[in-house]
Each structure stands twice: as C-alpha cells, then as structure tokens.
Image 1: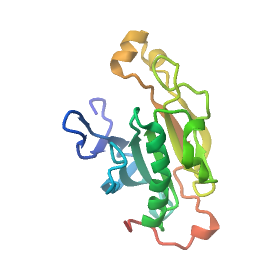
Image 2 (image 1 turned 90 degrees about the horizontal axis):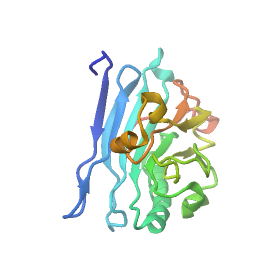
Image 3 (image 1 turned 90 degrees about the vertical axis):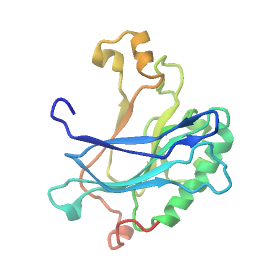
Image 4 (image 1 turned 60 degrees about the vertical axis):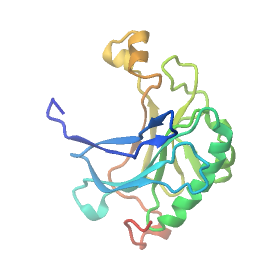
Length: 212
C-alpha cells in the first residue's frame, strides 16, 4: 500500500502436518471489494484433504449496494502427491458449498490444483462447471505445466465476462526467468467478472448472505 493503494487480506489457519504447514490467503482491493465474512476453512472431518479449502464471502463496492456482485471465494491447494484423490473429494466440497450457501449463486473455486483441467476427475460430473483457463495453458513459471485455475458454475455465474489469462511477470516487471522463479514457481492467473450482480431468474428472489 506504499503507493496509496488500499489492499487488505484474510488468512486461513496454519494447516498441514507436524513437519510442514502453510496458510492460504486472499488479497483484495478494499476500494473495489468489500469483505462480507472472513469465513474460515471448509470442514473435513474425515481428513480427506491435506489442506482444507479456505472460504470467504465478498461483494463489489457498486454504486447501488443492492446491485453489487456478491460471491464466495474458495482458495484451494491440492496436494501434489494425492491429486487424483483430492480432486475427486473436491466434487463433494462443491456439493457441500451448494447446500451450505443456498442463497449465494456465485461460488468461485480458485488456486493450485496441481493438474490440468482434463485431469479434474469427478469434478467434471458437475455438468455446468467451467474452468476459466482451458487445457494447455501453462501457469507455472517454467511454462511447462497447467497447475492453476479458476472454476465456477457457468450457468449461475453470469457475471463472468469471458476474459481470463496468465500474467507474465517476467515481461511485466522486466525479470529474468531465475528472478521470476525466485518470486514463485507459479504465475498469477486471472479472470474478469462484472461489478454488478446478474442473477439467473431462479435466484432473483432468493436471500443473499451467509447461511453456513
């Protein structure tokens, strides 16, 4: 925020094992986005995921608050050693989210899936699931793997503009490949959504807000 920006963040608890832990986080621009509920981690009573996904609720700071785009962000980091099993569990997480938040139609799951979309397993049993980045779009710094993505329901999240991509931090900041890898072995991925709510008719009269 040294340049006058107003960014803030929410963090998950430390997760992992006795030998390794990490936190998930969501960074957001408070001039454009309002934090509705910092939330927490999604329940995983059977310990099927090495890191429980992080869930937080937001809405845009639209001129008319009643028309602001509200959405749930679910930050995930799939264990690279258990990708197939954990990605299959994510289909159950998706169903849990739908049951836990019946009034929120816009659920956006994003992060490091450690696999390209064609290997998302049972997630593709959700017929309306959409990945912002298609197969073949490399997201690691070496440009060799498609690890990261942004997923949402293509029928419900009408706010998606159809624009998405991967930010080349080497070009943006004049870095060498080694300098970029020192920042991260992943590149930022992005997708664009409108600031105003665009509810499908079946959700237009449903309540919004937290119910989980």
